[in-house]
Length: 138
Image (cartoon, rainbow, N blue to C red):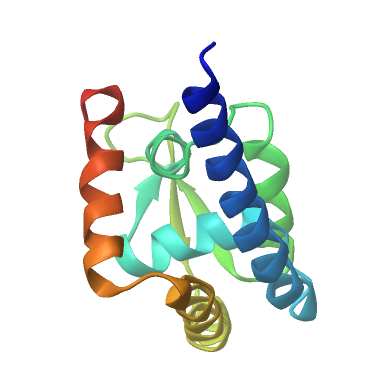
């Protein structure tokens, strides 16, 4: 791998690690893992979804989803019901306590990420966004 590509890769990893570290401080205050927050966040913003759809949205492996879903359900933050059209699928729904939790956690995390990215100008953030969208053809 060329020197420039290595610098880009290391820079991206450091940026993600920095954001994750700050986000995890917030999540731990609410006894949430990163995976649990991700599941709650997608249901909070996108509405009811199957486990597979949530997994796809949060880019999670199938191995971690049953534990995440089970723990969120035990804490009363989500419910899971069999899909009426396909009994093999479960539909996840965020509960009112889950909504109340996300109404606290999500704004804190958003603000933290905004603060971390203040090192870039708005133009630089826009340019970075455009460049990252080019990666992988997405």
